[in-house]
Image (cartoon, one colour):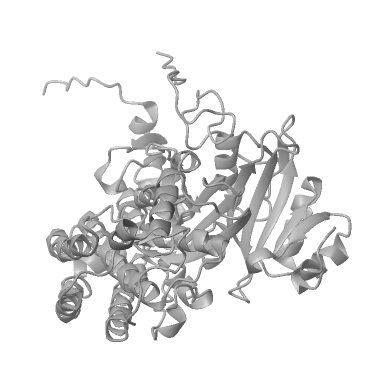
Length: 164
Length: 405
């Protein structure tokens, strides 16, 4: 159920009007408008937000791991409108832990490139249609995704293996 | 004449006069990459055809470590991301957590935070100016800027006891009240700095070598920058007036009078002018903060969050209990999420914190300006000669600790 504080907001209302079944949840706690969007429709919603609502700047893409809950991952997008400079929006998409895949928003904002690579590297969420989906922080032959909650914070096993 | 014995065979293209592409590895230990940045360049003669930045050499898993510590213990970690603007990082994090706690910070703490983050901005711009001017051949600027920076670091030591890793801002206020006599230090600083900035501008503004190396170099269109998540002085040098201090005022920035300097040339020289003007604006803010510094407490009245002072802890039972609880277990933060944007010297710094209601953060995401800005490296490099790329690299003003976290 989407709360009234969200449906009354003009940005959220425009998304709801155009993609009625795409928005599955939302809140406006602490004055921060948040829309939880169906992962399949993330690219369409983002394109609408950029082209029609003026969210020209993508600030960041990140992820939260809710292990062992399902859907496990929450991919979080923060964006800012330039006409209304203090207008910020958070869009979230939930992705399952068994098959962590979501469409890349690279076609909407090229700035998502490194952020999506970072999420892939640290969480293992694969972005379909990304031009260069490889690790960015960890070595290429690292095993596992460090920011997942089931990855230990410290331990004895040094998982980097030098191939030479 | 004897035939010259060459070790490497001369290729057919070279002999025929047609060059071939060369792949060159720059960094991660290259002096002009300002840290451990590796760039794989593809060259045609001197011209760059392709630039592939490789980051992650300084990845220390700060976001992972933060999840294993209590909310307060994360503050020293934020110091270690952008090690030239520590107090800006502290500020972004504590503001995000205070937003989640819905904690009102007293005016004195807010103004002191503004004063110190503006000094941090000057500190960071001084290091940027020294290193990037040295990259294009103006060696002496480096020595002057590091002299001014030394003054600032000594001031930070006076305030917090630390030169660089200050951790001076705490959730709910400041670590300590400002030491006795701090006004004199800041006054002295305000008195000498305008002349010093004049002198630095005198060294560079009309310097023909500096102008030739920077004017018209490193152009990237504003649309590209917005698309690539570039923020901060680079956008302002392209004529866009964006600054989180004005757009989304935090920590009582709305009470200060200052301008956002912009240029329209959108080259390395314009970025230099924008940053120099920003330092003067920072001095204005520091002057106002010094004159109007409110009296009163320096921490919020929240005994469950803020450590009690020593005197009360020794004499009052409740204070002792809270002290024990905060130190041993930490304080609980209501479940939820908060996003706080601040203007760091490098651009937009945002902290996204998620709490599950326990005394440890569930997720701390740092949207660092260097990471976003570095995405513009490829369009800044392509089509320019290598020598220009050094100037463009300096004008981006990134810190690799900030990029890799």
